[in-house]
Image (cartoon, rainbow, N blue to C red):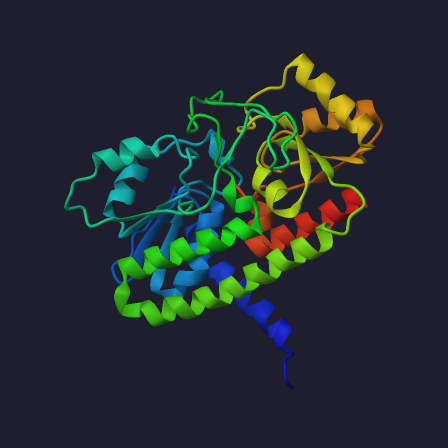
Length: 324
């Protein structure tokens, strides 16, 4: 019996996810002697590196499943694993406040290839109104855990499929640089991922351009690039980090935004408390929905074989529901 192509593609994707997920989190890290060891700083980078590297890489995600990256800092064993790997991929744009010290500690002959995944993407600046869809966002130079962002730069570039395309290219280039002998293999895998991300970007553009509403309320300021690239206006409850609590004035402005724009849903995230979003929704007489910023997955999502594209598909469906 011939298996339909779309079903076969889905099965292959699930198998790849299951294979790379064995390195999710650093509690039981085993560096490989015969594969390229790749360390990533959060889930989306981990997913892309695993899909591009396939069975020739050993991808290890530093942040365990179910943990919010804003709450995480490396331990000495993590730094040791990173220094012994062949490739280190981080987001940049101030997302990982500890990276500068780590890179500064490396010996010149370490042999570690370092890739900043956000390189080449036009970055947004938070903390003021601009023409990128942010309505009176909040600046948050340092969160409750002491993690610093670069001034008021929004580091959440990956939440937009359009930006994710550039990140995937940067990751591919890094893997090829670390293992040029298998360039053709990596290029082929990259083209498959690129096709999926291009189709996702097109779907976001086509469907969101037709919605009656454009305004959304989100749990924290992680969706600026999504708003910029697909014509949305967002109102964040919290700042660049979910640890930045809103002030009484912030809450007053959010309630006004909900009323003025007849917002039907307030979005929350699985990896942070939904208490504030649900309280605001209850006060306004509206409901809540999930909008996942892909900073990490829950254990349930990992076990279900979810990945960047599938989660973003769910995000799109929830956006369409909220904006109808």
